[in-house]
Length: 392
Image 1 (spheres, rainbow, N blue to C red):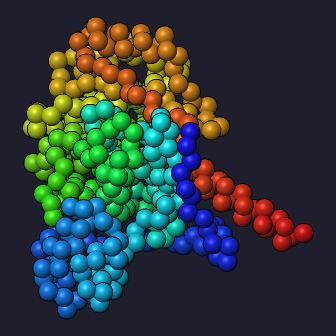
Image 2: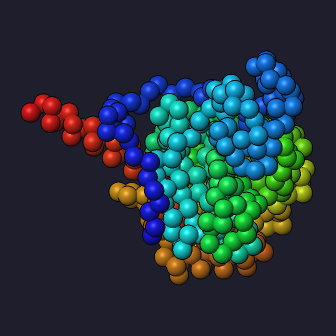
Image 3: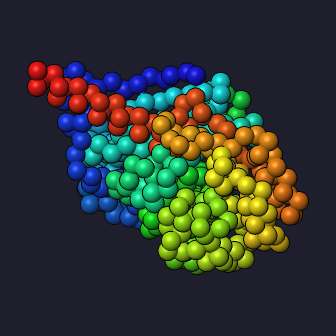
């Protein structure tokens, strides 16, 4: 494991616990706006409208996130634009790398002290960014580190997009070992339930896929939006005329167990969730990815593999089995490899395409929420220690 530079807290500042503020949305940013709205915003600042294209080209085309580096703009213009269109949204708290530099995880502090994470994963033929859509998560899945933190707030469009632009810049720098120097895929599988922040996530997708300089110019087919199964939002997504991949975090094929593992199943049962997902596949022609975290002695029984195979046989779907990345102190653990192989065999025997996700980032707390949980624990411990010292 390689530990990248950590941004230290200044010694003359209060600790992280003391400075944590009430959650609030950030100031407006360039990435919150489409190109027409950027022109209006720039004009309202007394700048010529063409400045909107200039700064958009820097941000989306050249991956420059700080206005001071946009040296073709007059200094006075840079000063006006910084506060109104390019405020700092993400401050790195901790950056870690493993897999010889091919996997890199960043923990961010937002303007209100909220914490989110994003991960960059390099492969020989592609580079993928995994980004957060919420600070924390309200879905309360008991085996998920983020789910146990609860929901702090939704992220803004720009807070989502800025994660991607930063990670695209890391890829462009050549820092991702053995991979192309261009970000090509984005998965909304970081912290949060993307479809619970629906309007902002959809606008972020549009910004990421719009041609430069309005957006980053990624292919819609290279964007994956994950959900635990918010049926009305899946139906709404089906009508959006987008060609993103839908990933359904199923984790159990039967309602009895899924009610426990994915509490939202108490509202929308397995059959209803799958019907919505299959309708999305039929409308878009895009294969559904069924995400299934294999948990030892919980959801890895052969009969559950057979039931899952029965539910998916003949459908436009494939199963992505995820060896569980246990969180510290959790009762949940990954299934043994022989059990995993038998689960895969039964699904494939049923005619269901099945893959096992590459277990990246275990040594850097790769599962979403683990770094944030650790930071909050350390901050709370530091605050408690300080209180104890004062009490003495």
